[in-house]
Image (cartoon, rainbow, N blue to C red):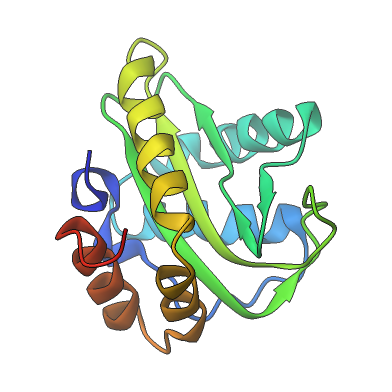
Length: 157
């Protein structure tokens, strides 16, 4: 699975303004709603589902990256977005470091395979230091989109 299969490019946020976990999740979900990827009536329910998943254990996986995610009945296909916080924020990451790169995923409850393939793709790419560095340095949504396209074309790992 490639980033282009699930990342909604119009929803990418290059300069996240939020400074805590709930706010950044809200900001990323709002970006999907604003670009007609999610039903506005489901916005709060999706945010709460992601926050509930975070209670099980932080999705801040380390090295400045978090992958907040949930399964939600309001979507019929895997939907994702990417956000970058240049200052980084406390996401209760496993390594205790602030998080700068966020991959947010929402998938239908009956399609766990897509969810797992997306997580696998994200984690494989994140093993590449150059990929992470380019995302952290991205100044615009177009920059982030270009990095994701290069990853899809196997220019990193």
